[in-house]
Amino acid sequence: MTPVPCRDSVGMPYEITLELLRDGTPYGMVGERCGWLLARLQRGVEQARQGRGEAGRWPDPDDRFPEEEPGCELFSFRYRTRSGQVGGGELRCQLRTLPVWVPRGEHRGEWRVTRRAFVEAWGAGGVGMRAVLTSAELATFVGVLVEEAEGCLGGRDLARNPVEGAGSAESR
Image (cartoon, rainbow, N blue to C red; front, side, top):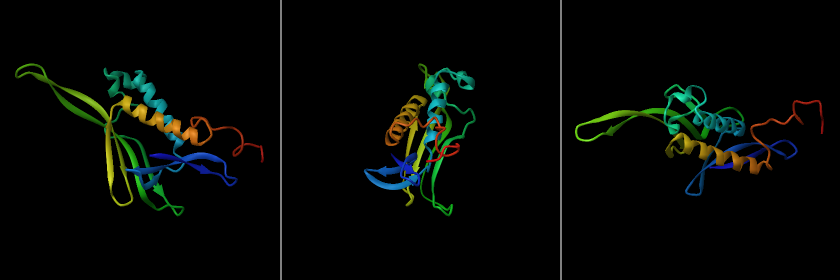
């Protein structure tokens, strides 16, 4: 996955789109202008791992995610054409709760409930990949992706929307 800058009418990068790669070969473009959402997810996972909010109910930090509902999506990015048609790839992350049997000696054991992030990427041709991540692994994955995105935007912080330019009284 590679962040690709979105550029305004004068060529300045202002956001990112993600290019999906499999074995070095591109197979989809997703998430136009998704950098801010990824930066927000990064902060949410870090806060959940620290035990803030409802995530603190989970004793293992690897089970702590920003959403509490089983089956919820942490993000879902699709490719959209200018006319709004969907196609060309998808990247999504769904939170799932899984029971795991933990043996404790002969004929004994207990069920332990874990939570994992299922990150799935699908290309336009239907070829997909899946990764099952703990919250620490998701934090690392999204953190590296946000860092790469900020690098391709000239170091601009994706979590902040600058006051200059669009939406202000200032003109170029």
